[in-house]
Amino acid sequence: MHPLAQLERRFAAQQQDLHVHQAELEQQNEALRQSNMELGEARNRYADLFELAPVGYVVCDEGGLIGQINITGCAQLGAACGQLVGRHFALFVEADQRAELAQFLDQVFRGLQVDGPPRLELRMVRQSGQHWDAQLECTLLRGGAAPQIRMVLTDITALKTSQRSAQWHATQALHLHEELQTFLRSITHDLSAPQRQVEGFTALLNQHLQPTDQMTDPVTARLLRNLSQAATNLGELTTSLIHFYQSGQSGEPARPLNLNRLVETVFHELEPERRGRQVVLTHDPLPTLTFDYQNMHMVLANLLSNAIKFTGPRPVARIHVGAQVEGDHILLSVRDNGVGFDPRQEQRLFGVFERLHSERDFPGQGLGLALVRRIVEHWQGQVWGEGIPGEGAVFWVQLPGALSAAQHTPPDELPAG
Image: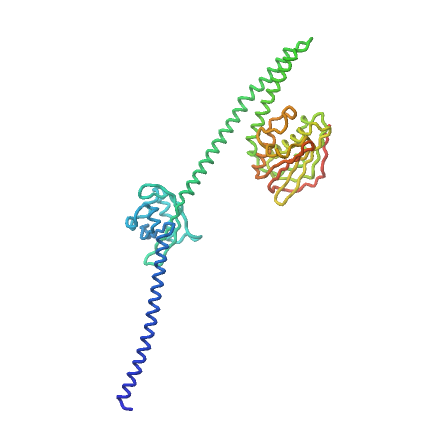
């Protein structure tokens, strides 16, 4: 082949290769342009997310100097971006927390916080001097020439204000409780002695006005009886009020209580209230429960005393104490065959000084069931009653699971002579 022809063929081949390489280069350039466009869009989206986020974003170097801050962060610190970049973030933290912040940031830079993003609550100060509360969450950024920290600032002022308000109210409640206890001690000290004196002087006056050979004037005798009863009622009311406000606050530790023995002990202690009557107490095999003795004793004493009182008109009073285990709860019941009550009045049963029956027929202070409810609710339990007028009543006490061991003692019957 002629050399010129060979040269032309080689030139054509090189031209063809050049066209192929140009096409490939254009494809690569197009791919690069597409990648750059997507990268720009992603950068814009990130910038929008950074700038328009509802929380403050602040990027600081290891010295705590602000390098970037978004719009929300500027609003939180109370200055424009140009006034904040290059300044120390610690200047916007209350002075007494700056050392804590420095230690916290040092731990973040050294990677000592490993359980999730490190968090710190700070009391902040805007450039105007206004105070606010923030939660600071940090992330260590290692991609650049030097490590940086991205801070997320969340305004928790409303939450902290609510917490401080709740704490203040709790403190006030504690002070009120202490004042109430002081008041109750004052009542015990200041009223009990005069009340005993009134009772003593009334008894002496009654003896003085009764000559040996004739009875005292009936009107005087009745007035003396009323005076003595009023003094006794005052003493009982004072004692009941003290028991009510101290209920649920026993200093005794919880311990296993055999309810079989406790019910029998309480019933024996109530002998003066059932004297001269036929009162029969029965009970299921009762469990051993872990509660404090004083409060459980008061619950059973008031429920049994209530049953004894309202079975007064019955020739034979019958009271039964039951117990059921229901999942994680214990359900106790005290049932009687007394006068009962209107079920529509059930909500009034447990109110302080509430009465559903005449005081003349059934005397008392109206505090017994209120005291039971106070103790049971302190134990996070519930109490309610069911009654039918003329047929009796049953009171239920549901207690959280404090079952120690079931007692399989056969039911006892304790008649009172």
